[in-house]
Structure formats: C-alpha cells, structure tokens
Image 1 (spheres, rainbow, N blue to C red):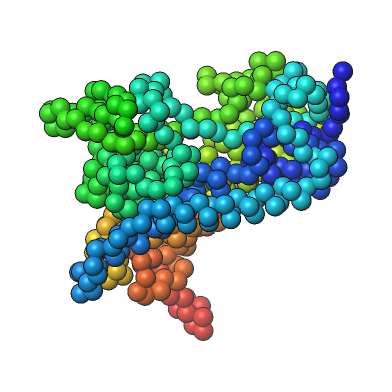
Image 2 (cartoon, rainbow, N blue to C red):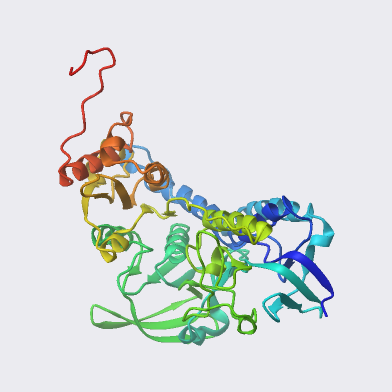
Length: 478
C-alpha cells in the first residue's frame, strides 16, 4: 500500500526536472520531486559554467603571450594556479547558489530526498522505505561520466571532469582521453594555463563534427596548439603511485610519458540503470534507455515521461530545459497530450578556434540521402578575422536543391558561438539561402564570412547571385 499518492512524481531535480516541476505546478499542487543527490544542474556544478570559468582564465593567459604580431609586448604571464581555481570555484558556487535558492523556494511537501526505483508502472519505492503512487511519472535523472574498464588501470590517479573543479591548485601534468567537447575544452584550457597536457582521441574525431572538411581544419588547428593525437594508439596504462604512466605509438615509435593525472572524458551515460525499469512495461533500447517520442516526451507507457540527459538524445542544457517544459506540460495535462515542435539543433564548443553545428549535420543529410549542396568560406582571408588575428578555420553551409532552403552548417573558426545563433534562427525560420542573403550584413564584421559562404552555396544551388537591393519607389517591373 502506498504511503502517499500524487498526480505527478518527478525523479531528478536538474535542469529537466526543475523545468517539469514549474509546468506541473501551473496545473496541480499534487506533485513531488525526488532527488537523491544535490539539488541543481550538472551545468552549474561540474559542466558548462565552471568549464567556461577555466577557459576564461586560459584565454587571458594565452592572449597575454600572443600579442607580439600587433606590436604589443608583455612579459610572460605568471599563472597562479590557486587563484585560478579559487575564482573558478567561487563563481561556480555562486551559479549553483541561484539554482539552490530556486529549489529552496518550493513547498517542502513537494521535495523528497531519496533514491527512487520503479516498483510498477505507477509505484515508486524510495530508499527511505516510502512508497509513492503516482498517476504520471517523469524521469529526469540526468547522466554521469562513463569510464571504460581499461582506464581503471590508472587507479586513484584517474579523474573525470567533476574532479577538476574540486582542485585547489593546477597540477603540473595531465593526460586526457577523449576528443569530445569535455576533453578538448578542458585539455586546451589546462594547456594554456601552463599544465603539460597530452590529449588522445580516437578515429580522428574532433568533437561532434561530421563534415570531413571541417574536421580536417579542426584537427590541424588543435594539433598545432598542443599535443593532440586524434587517433591515439596507447598500448599501456599504469598507476605508478605518484602519477600515471603510458606507452603510445607515435609515427611507429613507442614513447613513454608520465603525468600527474589521467582525465577520462570519453562520454556520458544516462542515469537509468538503477531505476528498476525492468519492473515496468517501458520499452528499452539496446543500451537500456527508454524509447521516447521527442515531440511529447512519452515513453512506450503513455503516463511515464523522460527528459534531459536521461533520454540520451541531445545532452545540452537548453535541450534539457525545453524537454522539461514539454514533459511537465504533458504530465500535468495527461491524458490530454500535445506534440511540441523542438527548437532547431544548435551546438557550440568553446575551444579556440570555436566549433559549432546548426540544423542538420553533414552526416545526417548524407544518411537520409538529402538532395543538398554545400557552400564554404575559409576564414584565413576574411577581413575582420585577419584584423583580429583569429583568421583560422572553415565554415560549411548546406542548402536543399529545388527549394533553396537552408538546412544546416558546421564550422570551426572565430566567433562561432555567435554565428551559430544567427544560423539557428535562420534555420528555425525555414529561410531559403536567398532570403538569408537578403538580410543585412554590417561591414567590417566576422559575419561577412557567413555571407561569403551563403553566396557560394547559392551558386551551388543554381539559384544565382543574391537579388539586388529592392527599390521601394520604383514603378511596376522596375
């Protein structure tokens, strides 16, 4: 027999869970949020915010050492590792505090500190022994860093990104495994802050990039910036007490290096393994993650919803926030369900140069055999970029034959975080490439490079050059 019955139970108080709670509270007061760990988001605690704080310090150090081409000379920067980490943690705690204040404002009756496990399609058994019966259930349990078994050889010298933000001081050396977002951002930042870094990727991948032209440019840039092996062949890994030791192949020659720590950044996995989903009728994929209808957030059991990193689709904060609102609305109104249109995909990596992807990737377009053309710009010759000495990288834009509709883009280069938004808005507005070229471009700005790529794409689409400026006071046919 249930100790408590509610309309909606939400498992997890991260970005998705908090968003779901706010939506549910607009409809009913019969709701509980069950959280076993700390309240707040991965982003604020160990993700996007503390990593950007570390990157900001790294950018300051890097810029101070690379101003000679401007005719400006500084002495070599002195990096105070303790001061760097003190600011990272202080500002991080400030961001986390805002989230905790939000949760603290919720009614106490709506919050339960416990671990939840499904007992049936409608019952949750808590680690406190309490049984919650819920008419609708939202899974918003987030994700955790996954460490493949071979890396356990590093023992107590193995760290994940969470551990980095607990440091009191910067170490002398770190070997990083994984050339995804976390590995590249942290690896480059630590290198710029004076830490000896060696980064090993696999299969020549660079972040989420799928366009070979962009990937090649990105590999070229990062390999020139710090020791980066995009397809590292590590043959031995060991804990040597005071650090770690690895053997790896470099152009056929075996090399041995020692580091203070081994940072494993090989990806994250949804926190669903211990939820007792086997006690429900929810259909799972090959990785044990519930199948989900993205437009509604429903699993195969209509009153059970899933959102955020737990759904294993696009593990980004803004996606988790959108999905939280969707499942919160539908859980509150069930059995009335609405299908929501998702925002256009947008992803940014805060490396230098930055990486971004918008809309459909080159891989996605190829896999669905889309009839598309490509336009590009090499940033090396772009005016404003050369002025600022950030003229490195390439932008590739994709458009649909026949309609001329803008389909997506991949890029490594300057100001990618801002260009990503410009292109994402165009994609969500379903603009054609010609319509995008009809929009204003100021001079001189980096965004003029976007216009160059779009012009190239327009020609490839056989749409011809952009139309001339419209005449508002001309007669018919002028």
